[in-house]
Amino acid sequence: MPVLEVKNLKKSFGQNKVLKGVNLTLEKGEVLAVIGSSGGGKTTLLRCLNFLEIADEGEIIVDGEKVFYIGDDGKPHVPNNGGEYMGLVFQQFNLFPQYSVMDNLTLAPRLAAKRCPDYKENKKSIIEQIESQAREILAATGLSEKHSAYPCQLSGGQQQRVAIARALMMSPKILCFDEPTSALDPELTGEVLKVIRSLKDSNRTMVIVTHEMEFARNVADKVIFVADGIIEEEGTPEEVLSNPKSEKIKHFLSVLKKDEI
Ligand SMILES: Nc1ncnc2c1ncn2[C@@H]1O[C@H](COP(=O)(O)OP(=O)(O)O)[C@@H](O)[C@H]1O
Ligand SMILES: [Mg+2]
Image (cartoon, rainbow, N blue to C red; front, side, top):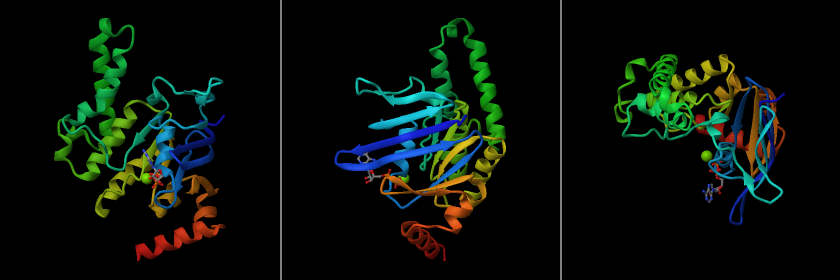
């Protein structure tokens, strides 16, 4: 059974039809790279997958559970706690500047724990468990020494690694990244890509919007090229990046190549 199925997802902003019917299937442990020109709808797709935007039509099915759909009454149905299904790492990190690294990681799980019926009587052990999970994740992302630092005291690469660690705290079934290295100086992209690579090695299912074609080639199982609100081309990295068929993707890749030179 696929871990993610997206069916006919559509989203408009006013007259602007941004997603015109996106269909996707992802198996457990697979990495999907999403590529495409600016303004093509990649961020909107990720935001709809993370329920930060509410799609107008379509379905999102996670592990066989229909988590987003339009009901018979025409109203969209969105899960109460979307974070258990989907996590999102933003281009600009979006850390809470007023909180330490540790608090950035533990804030959402602590708020979620408060909603549990046994929270009051088990508060101490619940918080200890959340903090111990945070320490484990910080160690796995190479950030143990930074647990008390504030975001402004960290490099961009470290901040993005904190953002990844924070997303992992909710144990989402699918982790999404929106151009995770595009706000970083080139010398800092490697450390972030290394963490993402290690997540792939530990069998995480991920959707990664990226302009790093070499990274997409190395880490992705599937690549989709999004243009004008549809998936214009899809396949293995070899198929899409080395043997593109449509003129749009050929043009997109040739412009990227020129930029790299
Ligand atoms: N919140 C919003 N309100 C209105 N228009 C939006 C909003 N978010 C995105 N758009 C529009 O949707 C289109 C796709 O944007 P986006 O999903 O950010 O593309 P990409 O990430 O591929 O560059 C653009 O025309 C953009 O202006
Ligand atoms: Mg974008």
